[in-house]
Length: 294
Length: 330
Ligand SMILES: Nc1ncnc2c1ncn2[C@@H]1O[C@H](COP(=O)(O)OP(=O)(O)O)[C@@H](O)[C@H]1O
Ligand SMILES: [Mg+2]
Image (cartoon, each protein chain N blue to C red):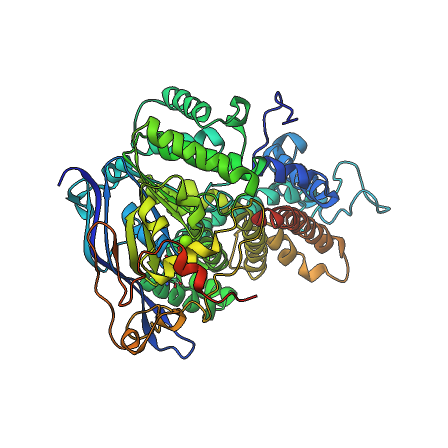
């Protein structure tokens, strides 16, 4: 065979990544996310201001590009004279943090239930389908509102509530992907060599459903970030002195007519992040779909 | 008896299936299998697609359980073996190497997996053993870090064989190991299996829907029809003097031995029956050229000892003469 013998063969995951790199969307989305993540991590290095520090002599300064803007406050200040750029930066931490933490919860629940239902079928499948149906009948925002209103709000509770509400899509997608993989002969082969059930689930099935899993994860992380923003906007999410983009929009809503940039800036940050996550998710779907047939 | 590697007695397997109208039905995939394979022997198991060959294989592998009957492996009931003990004793080679190898694992990992599962050796030792096995089955060394998608069908089947043999099993169950492969590599794989079988002194069941495949390799042949073994015996005898009309029809189908020529039709009139509605009496009677009223009424018992068959009107043993007198369907 005229195989190139020296080059280490690429794994299916690496091949998918190569294909992704040829997508403009993957680059665009990936770069935006990278910048946002770096901004969140290095926020204290990027701005000298404390996002909660009030300076009542410096209220309502417009952004630098307007006539009365100043380089001291690139994105201006809010009604309490807090630096807007610092607030947007630190808000990134809340958005990403909540997105990732809730993903951990919803992903763990959804993947476990989905794999169990897809692999065992029978009555576990019936029970889990019933749970999914119940979950789907619950209006997410309403339930979150009620829980937070009843129990009071903290960041932990917010993460828990969102995480416990957004597992359904994971379960549905993982269930059907698992059913497909479980019927393949390599699962029979794994059983014939004496593999334990956990080994089959984690070594044989899980690596073969990563494509759909990443796609759902991208959808749900965006979903969680938007939900946090919505709840914070309604006053039931992140509480001052913490900063969140949703909270910033809420605090600025009286200024909609007079200082629209106060809403536009956190809004734009939110849109940009969601857009980037969706771009990456779309690319992953594109590059992993044909692989199922390989 | 300790000289028998595998014994099946009256083994049945029922699958519950739902029909279009939601009624529960039972599909009897195996309808009383009696089978004995001596140690170190090769049994060829032949029958049309859907007759229950893979179901039988899965029961022997312990992946499925028999609904009734007895399965003895080296003299002990198969249910008495632990998961790992059984895996160390019996290993499979499956039909489709495009589906039987996990696409996310390297060749090395795939081959070494039986050792890893059983916790044999450390990872360095397992890697070395995997390379040795790869060499034994004729896989070029540079392919061990490849993924299945980078291999040809024949190479994949070699990986499957290496994986089956790395744990030094005593019994190898090959379920149509060549039917997904190009004609040109089929005989390579069969020769490899044959060589390894005698080198490693294995007991082997070679399943195929094609009698020609088992002809040279099998010591004994069992012909299956709709979940039953309708004829079995020493390979040479069954091929020379088929007693069951079904065996005769299968033999006729492989008579033109030219490679690459599409197999002719079986010359059987009716279609293969559904195991959900097995015909009355002898299951083969709607397609049989010698069937009469008795065949439709009563299922034939097993007859003969060494060379046994289930037929009310066994062929006389007049060699191929019987086959020649059937009217040709042009
Ligand atoms: N898991 C299953 N559920 C229901 N029916 C099955 C199942 N596995 C096999 N069957 C049925 O049992 C019969 C025998 O199948 P199989 O053993 O795969 O035949 P073969 O390998 O000879 O082609 C077929 O009719 C098939 O549809
Ligand atoms: Mg089969």
